[in-house]
Image (tube, rainbow, N blue to C red):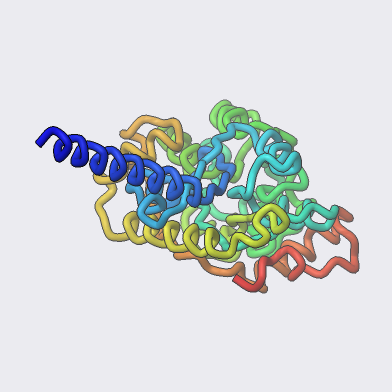
Length: 313
């Protein structure tokens, strides 16, 4: 009887040991992708996918590495600390042209508004002529500004470009009347409107060419041989986008507030467009960015825009 009990205990111990070993091996087999993000709307599908444990269910560990400075984010990518980032076309193309192995996997859904001081007299894009516009040079914001001006048949020289690197400072300067206008991303655009500033109507609409300028980029060298992990990343991202599209904002406002570092009240007043699934960047948008960068001598004239697109996925 005693021997039978000992035998049973031994079997139970072996089963437990086997289970622990199996779990450990399973954990060891889970790949990790580290993605650098900023407090911006375009990374929300990733944040929701993480919050809803979509990546966990797919057997993928996604670490969202949060930055408040794009310079710090880009430095981490160049140092090999990240597998990818939520970035923008101008940055990725410039990095790629300099030899960095970063390529765009997908476009993302950035939200921007052309914010003006109501005392500036600006009602339409045509009214921007002769006005002061805050921006950061050689960035996606300057690109978007020039694209918007072109729609109104204005030249970049028709406005006075005021160099302001930090987005909160741009907002403050528009509010104080030190400049007349600025393109601001969400959530800063909503904060600006709550301060009494105005967003120009029918400008920078979600999905328009000048807003399709942000994307999910991966380091093609660091992710080489990780096709299965990338497919899981795509699937989890798409599930996150579906959740955002199919649930009321009340369900995900707390996550958004945390990610964007704002109050839930600000989030509740924001207008979100459709969150697209993983989609290869449009050639038209990529070509427009390449043409603009070449005109400013930021990339070589013989650079091929398609070089910054990740293929074979």
